[in-house]
Length: 81
Image 1 (cartoon, rainbow, N blue to C red):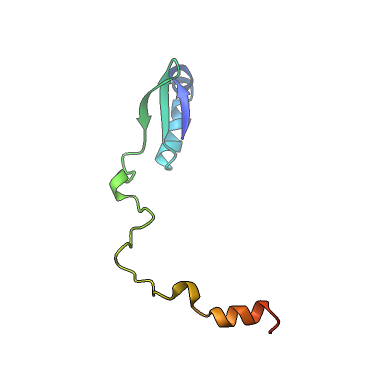
Image 2: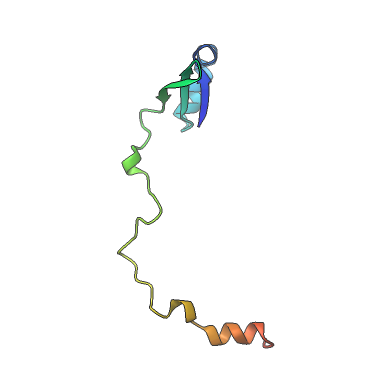
């Protein structure tokens, strides 16, 4: 996420707002210290964003997953077609 100082944000406000509307949130800082985060009103809340592991508990991995088709893989790498 890009950070802009107050003066820079004021001079480029229209462009920055257009970018935020398209989903490119940004931070405005004062003397290098982040003060506010600007994001589109319609942007999804952090709790709405899909994260890795969202199917945890809904998918089962077989116990023999690591050895599944081990004979076939060995055949391919050790001289078969």
